[in-house]
Image (cartoon, rainbow, N blue to C red; front, side):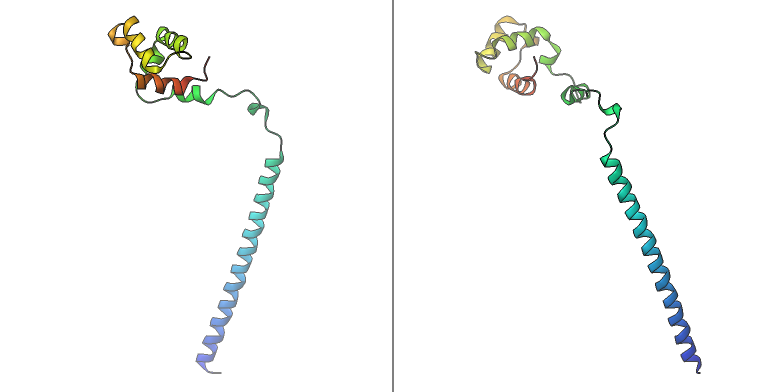
Length: 126
């Protein structure tokens, strides 16, 4: 046999070994993936742990505690909140803003748009 023929034969044998190793690695990875998916499916079927059964904190309250910037003026002033809530169902926001100007000092005044924004964000609260 010629040298060229032997080199080609040896190269083909090496390629065959590489293909065999690649197939073996593929089957091992495929089996590992299948096991992982089955374990995840079993874990998903389990009932939730008791740690998750306790009532969760209201998400809006959590967000409020971690909000950037200063606390809005209305949120800092319980008397102003009560004043607004007492009038919100029967007065417009513009009328409430005018009443605030009449009953509160200048540093506690808020605009109509501030009232609207605050009401939109807090209307579900008692």
